[in-house]
Every structure is written in C-alpha cells, then in structure tokens.
Amino acid sequence: MLKLNTTSRNLWLAMGGLLILAAVLPNWLSFLSTVALAKGLVVLGLVLLMRTGLVSFGQGLYYCIGGYVVGIAGNQWGTTDVALLLAMAVFAALLVSAILGLLLCRYREIFFAMLTMAFSMILYGVLVKSESLGSTDGFNIAPASLLGWQPAVESLGTYIYLLTVIIAFVLLQLMHRYIRSPLGFAGVAIRENEIRVEYLGVSPKKVIFFKYVIAAVLAAIGGALTALVAGHVDPEMAFWTTSGEFVFIALLGGTAHVVAPLVGAFIFEMIRTFAFDLAPYSWQMILGGALLFIILFLPKGLWSLLPNRKERGRA
Image (cartoon, rainbow, N blue to C red; front, top):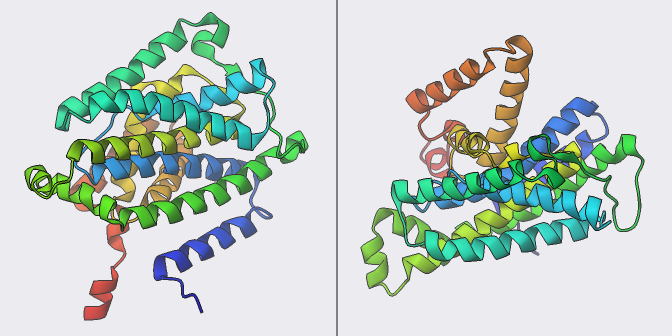
C-alpha cells in the first residue's frame, strides 16, 4: 500500500480544506485567496533562486507576460479556454526565459538582481508606450471558459479559485520533489561553494539556467491566474515595485518549505488589504514595519516558527 510522506499528506489536507472553503467564503475573500495563491506560485520560483544564492528583482517580467498573454489571446485572438491560455503563457515564459537565461546564468549577487530588474523595466516601458495595449491604463480581458463551458460571470471567480487551488497543489507537489532531488540540492551546494560544485563535474551555469526557467514558468502561471480572476491587466505588473512585493513575500514566509511562499502571500495580502482600509494614505508604513519586524526577529521567515521534525524528535 502506498504511503504518503508528511508533506504530501499535509498538502492533500490543505487542498481539501481550500476546496471546501469555496462553498462558504465571501466573494472578497475568495478573490483575495486566489490572488494570494497566484502570487505564492511566483514567489515559489523566486524562493528556488534564493536557495541557490540568487535574488531576482525581475519576476514581474514573467508575471506580466503571463497576464498580458491571457489578455491579448482573449481580446485579439478570441481564445478564452483556460487550459489553452495557461499553455500559451507557459510557452511565452519558456521562450523569453530561455533567451535571457543564457545571459543571466553568467552573473551572480547584485549583478544578477539588477539585470533581472532591468529586463522587467524594459517590458514596463514598452507597455506604457503601447497605446494599442491601453498604455498605462492597461485593458480588460474577456471572461474565461473551462473546456468549452462558459460559467456565469457572477460565479466565474469561484471556478477560477477552484482551478487555482488545484494548480497550486500540483505545482507544490512537483516542486517539493524537485527540491529534494539531486538537482534541487545542487542549488544549495552552489550557494555554499560554487567552485566545489564545478570540481564534482556539475555545471553551475546549467543548474542556474534550469532554475531560472522554472521560476519564469511559475511566475507566468501566477500572472495568468491573476489576470483571469481580476479581469484586467496593466503595465504595473512588470514594475519594479511588483517584483519587490515578491521579494517581500519570500522574506515574510521563508524559504524552508514549498508551502511557506503561499502562507507568506496570503498574510501579505491580508495585511495590505486591512492596512489600506485603516490607513489609505500610509498603508506602506504598516507593510514596512511588518518587514522590519520580520528581518529583526524572524530572519528565516514565519515558517521558522514551526518546529521541524528533528526538533520534535529531540523533544
């Protein structure tokens, strides 16, 4: 009989709970949860790079690509099927990341971070100047369909939420297995001592290139899901502050577990929502204070509050 490990069992339980909540969640919380899960997938790719010792300030590039592919395909090409839209977003991210990754895999530390942000800002500048794509205002996207079925507009958000939960579950399972694989551990080894990794016959550039492409695909899926639930895209998706939010969430949740980015994304969205409601002109100060608290008292993120299995065994 097949036995599930602790992480897989917890992921199954979490997915079951999220699916059940779809029947009782109010519309605003369902929307917020969908956005949080989508952004959590973007941060999951960022965490993969951070475990390799690299920080990307340009994940907004692929987040925006995923969103705009969904918008352009729906409005200009008449494509509204969710599966096809996600496939197109993934293909676009693969194509762009494969080209840029050949350059970026040669750089480390601040040079990698600044180059990623530069490419994201180039896309932002192009979109701002594109009047056919709505310039700074962006544009609305056509309602999505599911395998040829067009749900009612008022219930579309619930179906997108359910789809996001399922996609997040599948990707979390895959990423958990990847991180625990030899290629996943190679990233940690590169962070600790890249020269020794080369002595072992492993190419750090190839490892980083592969991780960069994975992170790009995850970001594009997150951007596509965000566009589907929001019904609108704009150039702010590629702006550096959006990429900064992803770094903020990564620090908030931590990098020790694949679920940590999703937990951090949900808490981030909740803090920002209520902070904006309480102090619409100074909500950034509340977020800044939360980040300062995390850096000072929880440098490994909120996930570090949970004891790991080794510590429980000692107890």
